[in-house]
Amino acid sequence: MDSQRNLFLIVFLLLFIVIWQIWQTDHNMQLFESQKLKNDNTENLSNRSPNTNIVIKNKNQDIFVKTDLFALNINTNGGDIYQSELLNFPEKLDSNKHLKLLKTNPLFLYQVQTGLIGPDGTDNLDKNVRPIFVAKKNHFEMLKGQNELQVPMVFVSKKGIIYTKTFIFKRGEYIVNVRYKINNVTRKFIKLSMFSQLQQTAKSIKDNNLSNNFTLHTYRGAAYSTDNIKYHKYKFNNILEDKNLSMETKRGWVAMIQQYFATAWIVNNKDISTIYTNSIDNNIAVIGYQSSPMIIPAGTEKCISSTLWMGPELQDEMAVLAPNLNLTVDYGWLWFISRPLFKLLKFIHSSVNNWGFSIIIITFIVRGIMYPLTKAQYLSMAKMRKLQPKIKKIQENLKDDKQKMSQEMMALYKEEKVNPLGGCLPLLIQMPIFLALYYMLSNSVELRHAPFIFWIRDLSSQDPYYILPILMGITMFFIQKMSPVNVTDPIQQKFMIYMPMIFSMFFLWFPSGLVIYYIISNLVTIMQQQVIFRSLKEYGF
Image (cartoon, rainbow, N blue to C red; front, side, top):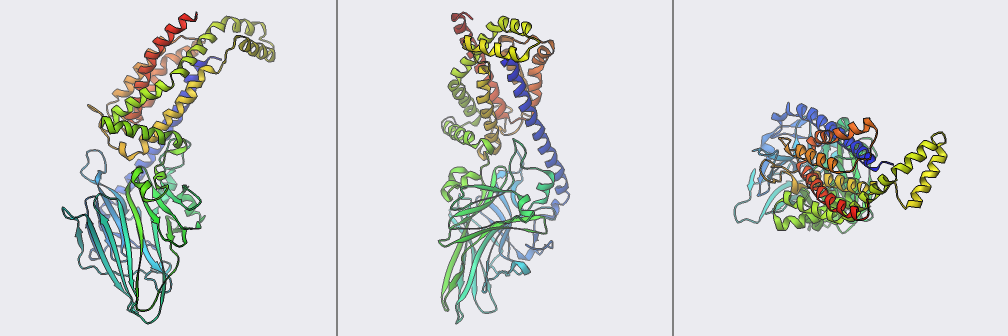
């Protein structure tokens, strides 16, 4: 077997799949965004009712909250956050607009909701009944030197029960606590439960097939964790098809995740809670949890609360907030490689303080570890090249008996102690590392808009001037020229000649950080080749 030829063919096929899916995702996203932008002007102060398509535009219902991390809107009809901006994250590189995580407009809805249900609750979602809260003011802002901001709202029922709903924000934290204080001023006990849920328009995701591609993708959908399940994705499609969850647990969380960002309600009650999903109008996916019923005796008051994560997927902070919440950083099916790589990359970054140089260092480390395999690859290729005359003779003598030819060749490999697949082994290890790095660069928020040097200002996106892919092609060209050629077929020879150019075209759309990894990897290969070729001469190859 010609290992060099198979190596390039396998890489070519993998990269073709990668590029095709990246193009599909980008193309579909552009179609969706172009439709969405037509209605962007109606987004700022609108709210959609949970179970209907009615858009409420009463500005007097808005409460505006600004902290060091958030700018968000709360609607007093239900007391829910229906729009939020992350002040530390621009929408795009060099954009003056902040990234909008929660949105509400006629084409797209993404909200967080909490409420009280049961015989004495404030909410009846089936009948679209929500309480109208009253706040002392409609603008709250975290001032300098202020470490905590509380946003209280009050609702009084017909029975005279006083419900106080308070949002609690802390400086420097993407954690939002929602606390209900229920004052039962009646002469009878009351019974209620708290629900916390997330809802998002799912039809656009389903129609454009923006998730669940064969390999490289960024997942957008629901996820959850329970006592018995560390982490499980739950597609929007399943929710829309009424494959609804109903799971009891004491601990866990429910979330909606996307590239770099997540919202999640943490199940933090001592008693059993129920995780559930449902859909609205066959278009809006809902995932949430409901606490066990709580009884409040007459003349007493009790508190019940829920905790929300709303922001970037910061793995260390999320892991502290709730077990396995850090798993929402979607590294795909190669997570077992991506996670250790990211931890190593982060450790290196803590010293060099530049993600680009960290990628270069980690490349040297990876290629250094793989050096014995690389040497074994070239040794195997050299042995195969030395056996070519014998192999050719067997092929000529037994060209009419394929079975006998295979047997003779296998006997020759065994006699000479040569593994015909030995040249492919480093590829089988390098490709998963290559793909794992792609997942890591595409899903670690720390690398979003991370600059390197000169014109590379975002390692997670493609090189705007395509200089890096060209350099990568040049390094491949030198590797090809320096490597011994075992290919004799003219068509295959031409294919090999054009391979650097084809790879350069593929890498035009790859994240700059990944192209840097491949350039440095190629340069290391060139250096290792020189060392290995000298040692092979000593063995007589």
